[in-house]
Length: 237
Image 1 (cartoon, rainbow, N blue to C red):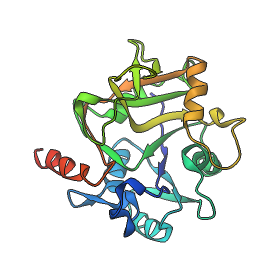
Image 2 (cartoon, rainbow, N blue to C red; image 1 turned 30 degrees about the vertical axis):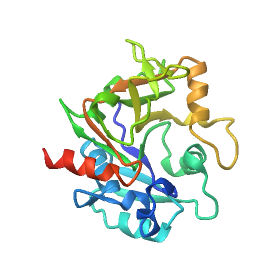
Image 3 (cartoon, one colour; image 1 turned 90 degrees about the horizontal axis):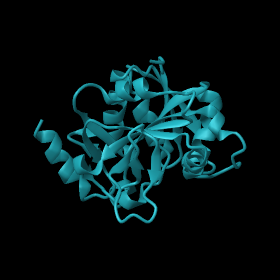
Image 4 (tube, rainbow, N blue to C red; image 1 turned 45 degrees about the vertical axis):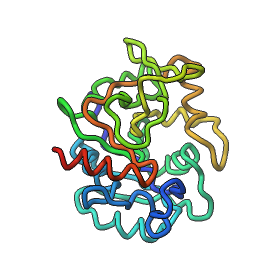
């Protein structure tokens, strides 16, 4: 297992679907069970061995920075997107000099999970095979998901290779918002804003996009109404 020690967390977005809550705070700071979602995510990362985190900043950036700087259990550095929101792919690309790793972890900050049997981050790292993978996504079964659930994102072969839902009415797995990725996948990508979907499409075309199954319960804050369901799941622990 490779000793991944660095992660990027995505904290720059506008969070428009969570309005009016995001009128006052950035989406990662919306609380679930008395704790901002970003801190639930960071707790999982620290427990999984992450020592250093790069966070991108745009919407309510001072509030986000001030909050993250209070964490004493992990080093946090900041990638400034205050002049232009760069979307997921562009945000990571700008942060690559700060990440300074050939392979690293990325985590969204609108979702986290209740662990099942063992550590999901350990399982993700154990499954990583850079010789055949460009990215490895933690995938949540839709049957064990709470919150903003769509018709699913991916199907997964027995060996872990992923395919998009495409024309299927539903797919069994959601992207759980955390993945391992190679920095080389960002070569020859656009300058400025672009989505990580561009990277997934490239990896899919090369048959190098893989997934591993999340064990436990996945909690996703897509809209304000999801928060009650997330609170209820955590209260039952």
